[in-house]
Amino acid sequence: MKFDEFAIGQVFHTKSFRVTKENVMRFAEEFDPQYMHVDEEKANQGRFNGIIASGIQTLAISFKLWIEEGYYGDDIIAGTEMNHIKFIKPVYPDDELHSVVEVVDKKPKKSGTGILTVLIFTYNHKEEKVFEGELSVLIKQ
Image (cartoon, rainbow, N blue to C red; front, top):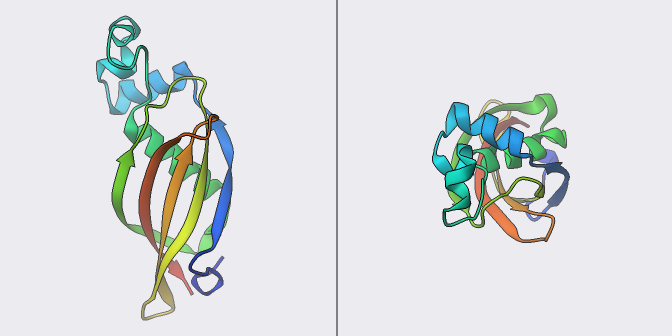
C-alpha cells in the first residue's frame, strides 16, 4: 500500500508465530547472550523460572509479523524511527505471538513520499500484551 492508502485509525491483525526454545537460544547466542536466554539451568533458578526470549527478539518477531502481512510491499523506502519500546511481559518458548498494528500518524513529505507511524501491540496466546512500540517508516505516496 502506498502512503495515501493508509488512514489514521486503521487497524491490522497479523498471523501468529510460535516461539521455540531453539530459536530463543539461537537468537540470544548471537545477539543477546545473557543467562536468562541461553543458560537453562541458571534461568530456571531466576526470576522468570526458565528461558525467556530476548526483548530484542520479541521486537524483531513483532516487526516480522507486520512486514509479512505485505501492506508496505515495495512501497516502503526505509524505517526512520522507533519510539516508546516496551517489553511488558516475558516471552517463553511455546508462546504463540501475534500483533495488532494501528496507524497513528501520517506526514506527507516532498518528492512523493510520506512518514507513516504505526503502533505495534504484540500478544501471546493467552491474549496478554507482551510488547508495544511505535514505528515510523518512509513510504512512497
